[in-house]
Image (cartoon, rainbow over all chains, first blue to last red):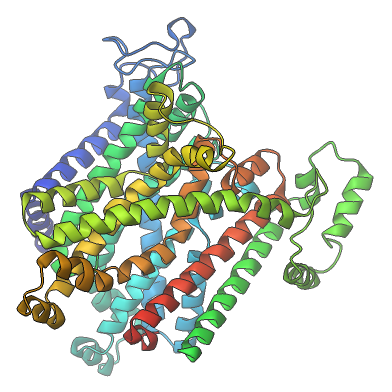
Length: 285
Length: 312
């Protein structure tokens, strides 16, 4: 336990030394903080309507103005961060866990299973993500869960492929062969010996994947096919803003900037995490 | 090369086959009567019976799949429930608008990205190089639909430089309408391609034939632009082919934001009116486009670089 704690510290210090990584840490920290403590941070109830104050510009009482129903945009932006993380974190970690397992099995298991899983991965990757998402939403209806499931399904192959490649390069290394000759089970080899060597690369991939997922959630909500109103998602804010782009430009700015800032933050963090975890990966980018 | 080509296309066909089957099963796996969902609660029994027979829903699922494939191979993706027109016809009417948008986006962003990448690689670790690096990371981070909305707000609504809606008529008008949406889609590609070209350029500049060219006393600009660049842009070809799915996804948003005709707008409109045959038809066509472009990118890559042929 102590060892892994110090490892995390080394990684964090390594990220913070890089100016972009430091910025990423600060941005992501701020987003996570405001998402967790959203209820205490927001000045107004994000779904409370107040028709008398509708479509106001920015002022000291409403930092980013109000929308067509008089709801405070700033409060909706902060609460929207919560929704973004609620979709992104389970989707990314779920996809990582499933992709990791399938990828390791494909890389270590029998050849026919490998071929089958690879074909499955290639097939799922052959759907353009948004088109696939639209097809699923059209069939099962929009909801937060649908978004999480679609995102998971479309990103499992990426994790699976990387995990498989890593497993293939490791499967004939001496420490694995030694373990095998001692009669260790496949589960033990994969879980105890393979996993620690693969997880770092996948964690980097996950960090880089979070902004994509946030953007996809916002995009689907923007199309009216993601999170249902009145839940304040960044995409829903953009949807309202788009409808009223001539009257209240603040909604588009209020919904758009957090997405760009969050994307930047997670990208900076992911890139510096990659440099710390495995500098060799940099060349492949 | 011939064997590689055949193998690659066989793989593409196999992937398409599995993809279509998956899609088909997904539609059938949805709880509820598809006819009821498609036609809505107000449909007459006659209409329901006709559609059931048309979609062969009264047959066992295996037969349904065979019928579906038979029709698809004849270019028949079903009929639009509302207008009675063929789905293929409707989809292919919208496809050119989407292709125009995608190619418009990738052409300007590839040109600018390659230039920036080559420039940064020629002057590594200078201020310009660092700026290109930071700008490209920031550009990569900007999702297309957010850029589309913000540029709509700034350039169309506020400054009124470009039209906000539609695809335009006549060549110049169409180009005018293409500027903002292709800007929105291409922006993130500029940074991505710039980083890619910079990395491969740095590698190429270290190779022997470049050293030889330098020894001959050729101008540095000529070396970079003529001898190194033609090799350094190879990865860009692959990335664009593989990125087709991404481009198609961004196009959906750009079409909605700028109210342009195209596949994306067609799908969204069809979802709102619950017109499932059109949704599925569009998804299948775009998936086919993606699979073919990925295969083509692999082929171009193998043709330019023989080492890639044995990699698979």
